Image (cartoon, rainbow, N blue to C red):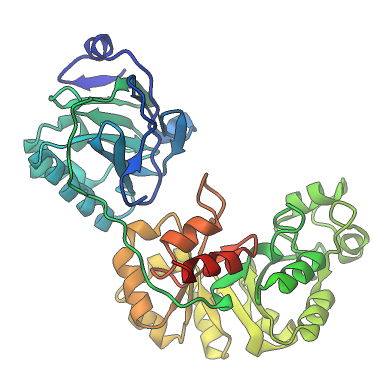
Length: 431
């Protein structure tokens, strides 16, 4: 059952008849976004809980935007311009505090805005916020895990709707909005271009194909400009190390129909899409031996000593590791470590002290979390620890250019599928 606050949905839909979709993203887009002028400007809000297994969204002037987990707040400067930001209130106390402050300020300044939840937005800070409760948001402060939620104040009153699965609304955007306040100013972080900011994800893309972990991908992307190369390292049935994202993907790439995992001999028989050469440990070592300025960044493997001993040059190896035990083992043996997101966030006490004690210079996190971990990202940067973000190209519009324009500088670098940075840097230097 849906729950509504103030005006009923039936009454609301009688007042507003046109269609417009508003789909929120995980990060600030900065300066107000212009909307194509249309006397019938509308917004369609689609909020889906975790249980719906759908991506929440909004559409404006036919342009659809998808949003990430948490609360997305959309503020209208005029009926034709808006700004927005997503706060991962579910997992980040910092993001939740920021969202509460913004909502209070929006209400205080009598701004026109809407709130859209995706996946799960519940947080004890929201539930206990006296400020929000006093602002007339009883459903937001009572939101539970895995609930859909929409709020707006387009008619001058606060309207809320909540449901265990989904809430959707179609609204006309008020035509009398005139608001010069900017609640989500675009923050730009300065950085010096450097090709070591970019790691070729799974060897990099080749002919539009991602995650091949192939020799051909290494060859092409080395030629294009990459010098750091991530390879996914997994084991064959006879415990030999090879480069492949996972066995199901490898089988799909090679049309292999036998038992998984295959033996090393069987692995070596098959090419990816009939064209691209797979890499076993001998092939990995030969390639890096022939490219002495290339650095290997490993994924999947969590046995630092065994892999470092098998690799051709430990000084050109950075191992992403996934447990504190593996990290401390690597530190004791002088193996360069990139701590992965989960063990980083699980560190008890001061994270920077832990990284310093274990001589960790690299961090890998999803770009989806960094907007809710700004303070941590800045502390890591101040200490000279290089944070690389993955999940590039996983969400609509969040490609290499988006990360380059919006997130580099806050983080050091990214796992990228394509080398496109020469043109970005040329454009940046001409500004």
